[in-house]
Length: 63
Length: 174
Image (cartoon, rainbow over all chains, first blue to last red; front, top):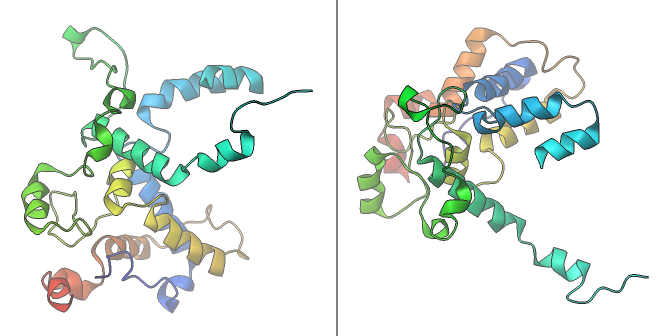
């Protein structure tokens, strides 16, 4: 049985004519993830890493 | 000169099975999370103020988790146990069977459910974007029509309109 995703044909004119609808759908999907792609648990780690000024310091924080 | 005793780098690299490692990792992750999405950022604080300790790590579950089936919500358990086929269980409690919701479902849950390494929606949309949008400018900057985007979301979640009007149609035809 085809899944619901498979039943959608993005090659159809309806969707391929305006690609921004497809890109917006992807962005919407990312936005609606209950736990973001950069997860809540790792959130503070990302903040700490981003506040370092050098790349090697970043890696140290990540490790 | 460095001499390397043991199996050597090439053999070691070849012995790494990314596919199954990743699958086990995602299953452990979903299991450790108990299938319950975390709402809001986690912070540390005293337990009496309602803070949840973050001690529960995937490593703790490592010894027992690989045999576990993918995480499902309690409402689906009886269904999939009775039918024994794990190909189309949905973990969304509010939708009927045979509808695999993609939007608003936890990423780890989606991927263990569909048994994939790349979320199907990513694969499908990126293919279309690379095929039709690679020459247009600002594909991710410019928004689509909100009505069409909502329509596409609905279709990706529930399939064609005939399917959502007649939920039994899918099972009859398969």
